[in-house]
Length: 190
Image (tube, rainbow, N blue to C red; front, side):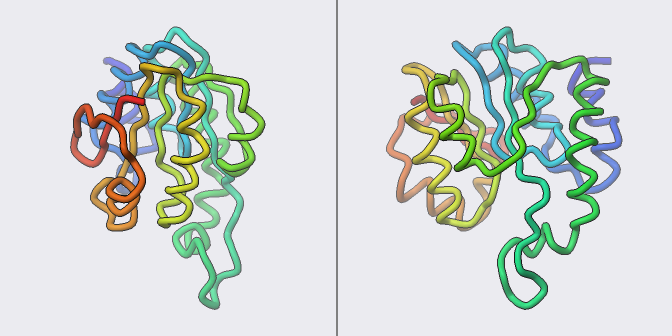
């Protein structure tokens, strides 16, 4: 059984999968072909990070804040995370467990993508995969904060390009060469 099959058969996939086999295969390919370290922004239960790191010879990182449930239920932000807070509380450990089962070494960075862009400011990445907060300002900030950390010739990939606010960021902010799309993931040359 290959790595992608093992990820899809893990307990990650007991609910609606966050990524398709095609998207996970794309991430594995991006990791394999990366010219430097790789980073996954928005980890949840670790499947995308596992795929990205599975064939990569460079260091791999994954960023998620896991425990920010916002000021819900009275109309604040992060409704999905607030409603599924127990699942998110368990996702940090689930990610680590998946990575051990798959046999990948990933540095788990707990905190916001903004915080970790500062902490990792001296690292240059071959691949940045953006799949964290999908609100317009957050997605735009991820692009603006992480774009300078991509090596020349590296790539930036966005997940959930079918969501309106992500589409708007791609249209309004990303002025890079579009390489291709695989299902809900768009890849750009940095």
